[in-house]
Image 1 (spheres, rainbow, N blue to C red):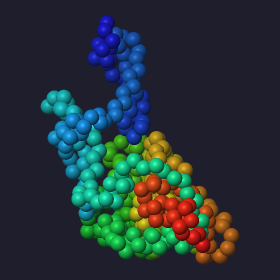
Image 2: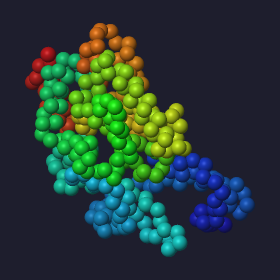
Image 3: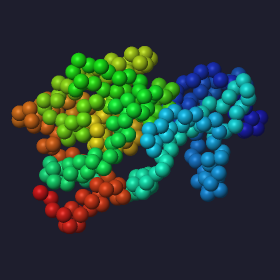
Image 4: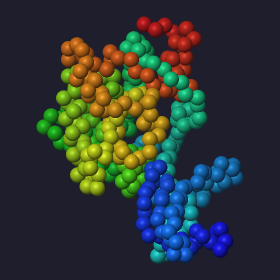
Length: 318
């Protein structure tokens, strides 16, 4: 029996596991009556320029998942159909930014990371004004379009209607989730209130609101996805976040951790709530008073405009 023929003779019996965000499967079966395990993982993309130049023409069966402003999301196939009876499932999740800007190019290009420690003084003197500038430049328009019901409403899984509008939120699928693999479930909860830009704006007085919000989100997600139990979910926020409007990531515990869940990026929501509840001081004490460490890329504005000048002595730390 040739080595290659072993694969074609594999008889499937059971799916044992699916991990790495659905990119690897482990199958139980037999070959010639003997038990066998088959582990299949999607290979890396070919980076040959000839292949990449033809990439857009090789993708077929493109399905539009949604769009907002310059951002669009698709599912597609990179392989031809098997047959009319057994079509090839989508194997690509595509995000398209068009027209893109130089800021997008910098964000998605490889860049060396740096680990920085943001003191309360650096936050107040440098980072907070940077956040305000980002908001004033309209970088959050696409987020507000979703909240205001102007775009992406087909992607909103749930919109709350609380007695106190301060507690309202929207649930949406994260852009990187394929919307079907439960083990890689990744949702975003966008709060409707606009006075909280990031974790830095949370005060002791916000702890009860956060605890109630976390409980409400857990209940709602398990209602939307009955196969998911509350203790299969983890909640975290990013600092620095991609955009300065408070939002919470909700993820299935089986999803393999990536850089966005690592130290230097993710802060557990339960830890934040506990920290606020036990923090010394009055209700105005909060996350603006603590040091926060995180990673930034050398091409990011946070590095070029704030931390590099501080490191080189061209800017002063208050």
